[in-house]
Length: 227
Image (cartoon, rainbow, N blue to C red):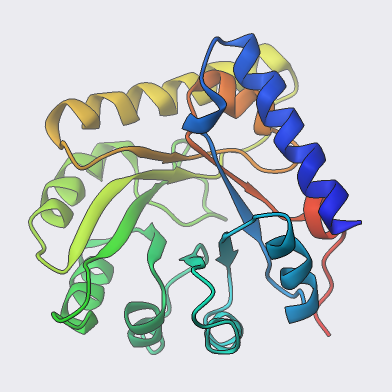
């Protein structure tokens, strides 16, 4: 089931990129494996999936330790709790949820200098939704400048979880605005190459707008439920 689901997602990526005349290789599939078992993840690995996203720090660390030396890339995509940020800095390859100078500074300080810099995305909150994390567009430029100067972090781009709109057209407008912000940052920071945008329900529209990474959980692993 999981193997077939991944093949179906890859086909959806192919169709979406063909519609907007993009190379499907420009879009990375991130399998969101939170609350899923090691067996589930291994089923995904069998068909070549090597990028995984986790929302819960402790759970993610346990999986990373059990699946060492398999050439996997691990992304932390949940809120960075100050009392557990050291684990993100130590074990993960990416953190997609940088939302403040304080958060960035902590991860930079906690990342061992002997390791490659931690790849990071700034999470933006484009509509200033109170229920979601992320920096406002008004404060983005200051945070971006700060992150770009931290030696143990590598600023790779943006992540967003925009609210769903009641029509395709309105949704596309929001996603295109996010993509425009991303492209403007690319003009300033040469390290930027990643726009993490789109999930199981909206990946096509995100790709059409310019997403380079889609975060897919339910469409791969089924409905989540923590044991």
